[in-house]
Length: 440
Image 1: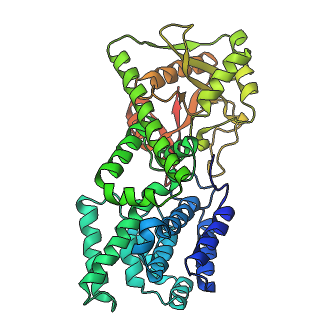
Image 2 (image 1 turned 90 degrees about the vertical axis):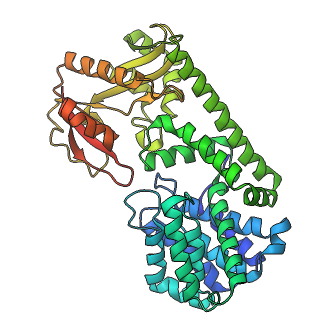
Image 3 (image 1 turned 180 degrees about the horizontal axis):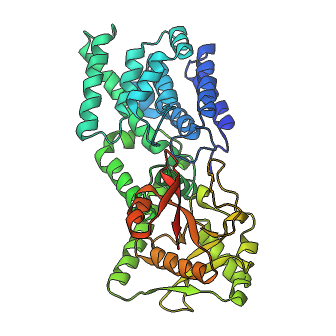
């Protein structure tokens, strides 16, 4: 269960916390509403299927204020600190012209420096823009290598440009501490505000928006949490200790669940490597496809896909039973084994694709549309997906289709240009999950 169902609920909670924190002037409410308006008008609202949407921005702001007002942290942060943390949290990821989901800190800084309305609000709150820039720069992730060096160089320039920090080493160190706090809140907040289902959805959003292969979702999530707990131990502990018990539980339940799934993935991969497990692509009979239990097992795998990849969600049962729809499954060990994946698709004309797509073959009844392949978590990366796809193409050829169209990651399509004469039809950024066709 998610703690806050929508941005409006989060907004109201943030406003209550802001007043408790002494941020009761109108400019703070206006900043909050302006942030929501900016994200919504730039296509980064709650409907944007990427990790860095308005929900993330508001969750970070909420947890920033909540933890800062409790236990040991309330003794460390002054009201002035809370003003800077609140404002920096609100705008830390606003990058309206992003070409990839991960915000570019320099683009964020350019926006907050140039936006006239925001500058007026900062002046009303009597805030130093240079300090806000420092806090945002400190949220750079990962905080290592060239990214860290570039951010630190810019931070030093901000220190020189600010009257409050340029001759005050002690305050500079305190501002860096505030930035460290914000950077860790940025990374834990979403996982404290809901159960594992929410966390997995966030991981899928992140993977989809960053164009990761599905096999990386759990592995990368485990690495992310291990780095957070091992390299940011002191701040992580301090923040979690300052949050309500149920939020701490949400976070650690999520970490443990990801680690359990990763263990299962490794077991599956070991079984596959030792040839204790075979993946068998299977063309299913129509009698099987009408079986409610069969449909239910497919739908549970279908729901593991990121939402933008779930085609025919409302008519899923009917599509499985439809003889015009091509379907094959991936089973364990033999044609009667457990289903761990499926490939499904039908005539292009029966799908409503994204409005940006102009497929010149639409209406000619010569193109089969392959929906995104669906596999159970743990079975990605074992070549079962490509075997299902090849079987699907054979079935399409048997039905006299001349062209296959589908979506895939940009680098996957590029690899098919020479091999299969694949052709890009429409490219999509930031997710780089593009629409293509191949002759069959």
